[in-house]
Amino acid sequence: MMPQKDRDTFTMWNRTKEHKQRVKHAEKNVKHTIEYYNPIILFSGGKDSLVLLHMVMQQNNNIPIYYSDSGYDYDSQQIKMPKEMTREILKIGRKAGAKHLYSCGHRDPNSKRFFGNLFRVMKKHNCNLELLGIRAGESTGRKNRTKGPLVRIEGSRRIAFPIRDFDWKDVWAYIISNNIEYLSYYDQYAAIEGYDKVRLSSRFSRGLLHKGGSLYLDGVLMPEYRNERPDDWNKKLNK
Image 1 (cartoon, helix red, strand yellow):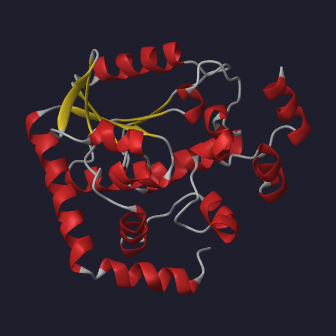
Image 2 (cartoon, one colour):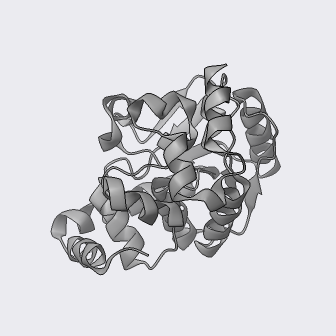
């Protein structure tokens, strides 16, 4: 559970003019994508995509949601999200309002399967736009990726980033003010890193281990989410 002092801080931020303007702008972005396209939400289970999911569901809860763990971002890795965490992610997605929530089953994460299943779901619902909960303030790369028009083309994909102008305080303020259930993972790691730095992807993606991800630390803090001993995971990484 989030400490009261942190909840109070985010509650106060929720009252600021700056935050309210960003929420209003993000909601306007969502409205535009719903009015002019048939979107699908790409849901990772992380705090940013959870905010996007909830915001979209407030306007139209018939929009489909596609979930796949972050391991699909990295073709070379064979690390999968722990099963218990996947169950929790699906649970919070439904509590946030998801009616049509698709979970991509797999043994070995890879982008080919990710996009294959995604495109099948999009075809089923006649979707022509992917909504991603990516924020410009997360990194220089994401800032460059999200700048420009709201809806843009990336290769064969049409994508949009409705909450791109949110910063980390806006994300938590939105979650707390709307009483949204989020992954218990965040409170565990925030005790060490702070709510401004804790990220879901840095723990279960090989590509982000150099930025602070620690499989061993995961096994210590949240053993209930670990299907294998940390040493076994490290062996896999070093193969």
